Image 1 (cartoon, helix red, strand yellow):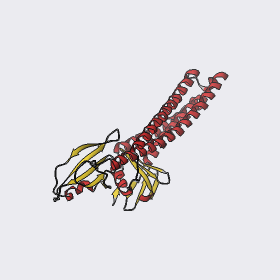
Image 2 (cartoon, rainbow, N blue to C red):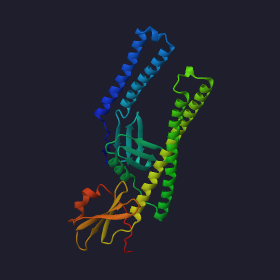
Image 3 (cartoon, rainbow, N blue to C red):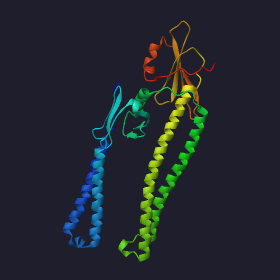
Length: 325
């Protein structure tokens, strides 16, 4: 197997990066010019402070455009027979064998790989993240343990979901505190310059500043903590869907094969006829309540070879018990 990751490269993003960089250069150039030609501003402490702040913002514009330009520059993602190699983000690199991967997931343009060591790798701006995820899952498929309790897994997932919701509400509360603390500090000081503060106002301003910095640090830490738990929740949810696919009894019929998709969303079961090569298949999807629902039954095909374009994309799994048993 060999597969390439396709990274999104929009021309509009390049144009915006150039515009942002030019704006930064223009701001810096303009205020350097003002400082040179206007001695009144050059000799004024307030003028120097204002110009310095604006020049700093111009420098940040240029820095951000450079960082955006370097993001995913020369990026690649190769899926080979036995391993994955990748270069992504700001020259981050990944090389691992499929046997080292514990779990993989995707969002529309992001691939998340969790290694057995516990390390997490996020590869952004992938146009074919879903296809890459399916291909990796096909390579890392392992039979599930016997004696899985789907009901217990569902209860544990509900508890994890409630816990995650509480963490997200805490995150929202911290964000509100950061915003309100900033607004209150502006209101309390009436937007005056620091040099015009009274001793009381200066004390409150220091208190607001320390509180704001502490709150922002807590925000970053809590965001990372919540993000890690969210990925663990997605992993549990994925494991539950897979357990449902692997343990739910199949529909009645002369079963000849069972397949699941690489994202653990649906199951395909093949059925044949006595003394005949003809086959048909049924598709069952995992619904929001983590139950399998039959959604489609195909027409009759002359043999299983006609279904190879479908089954080659799926993972063949051991046949679950029949509903007749």
